[in-house]
Length: 348
Image (cartoon, rainbow, N blue to C red; front, side):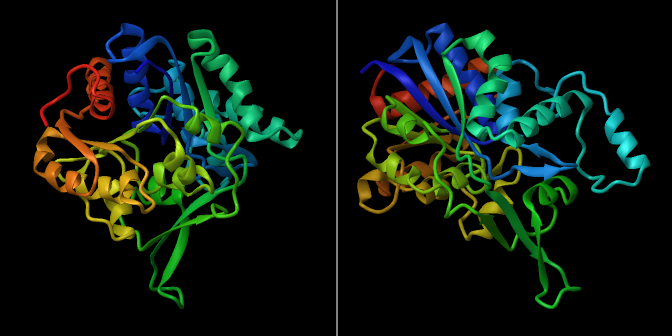
C-alpha cells in the first residue's frame, strides 16, 4: 500500500506538534509505506474561535499555521515568536475588557487580515488559504493544506458552578475557561453552540473519503477532535472512507500531558484513561458510530491494550511523548504500522 494522501483531524498545540513530526517523517523517508511526495491535509477545529475587540480569532487554525510555518512561540506553544504587547497594554490602560485574553502586536495583524476578508464576504476557508500563502506555501508548496472544519460560526462553551445564579451554574466561553480560569474549576458540561447546524467546509469530506490514511492525533478528544467529529457528515465520512483510520492517545500514564483533557473527559462522563478514550472514539468494525481502526497508547499504559482490542480496535503500546520531531515521527510510523502492517512497529 502506497500512502500519498494523509488527512489529520487536529486541535491546536498537540495536533500541531504531531504534524511537525509527521512532516519530518515524510521528508526523512522514515514512515513505512508513505510516498516521499505525500500530501497532508489538516482539518482543524474551529469551535475554540471567538470575537475579541472586533477581531475574529481562530486559535487552533493559527497555532497549526504558525507552528508549521516556523513562526510559533515555542515556549508558550501559541502566538507569534518575538512578540510585543503594546496594544494589549494600551487597551488595559483604557480599561477595556476583557484583560484576561491578550493579543500580541504581531499576532493582531493576522486577525486584522482575517476580519477584513470576512467582512468583505470571503469564507473562513478562503481566508485560511490566503493566510497560508504566507506561512505554509513557501515551505511546503502544495504538500500541506489547512482547512477549517466548517465555515460556519461554532463556539464551545463550558458550564461551571456559580452559587450566585438561580440555576447554580453559569456558562463561559471555552477561552475564558482555559485562559482566565485556567481550567482550575470543574467543567459540569460542554455546550458547542451551532455545531449541529454547521456544514463541513469545502474539501473536508473529500479529504477524508479520498485519503489513503486518516489520523486522529493526540489532541483533546472532547473540545478539539470531538468538535470536528460533531460537524454533520464528518463522522459518516470517517466510517465510509476506505482509508485506515488511526488515533493516538492524549492520555499518558492516566492523565493528560498538557491541556485539559482530564477536565473535559470528566464533564462528559468518560473515564480518564488511554483505553477509555480509544473506546470513546469507537471501532468502525462494531456496527455502531465508531470511527477508528487502530489506537496507539503509551507504553506506560500497556495494561490498556487488551481492553482496547476487546472493543474491536487494533492496539499497540509505544512511547507517545513528543519530545522532538524524531520521537514524534516514530509515533507516526508506529501508527501507520498498526493499521497497515507496513514496516516494524512497537511491542504489541
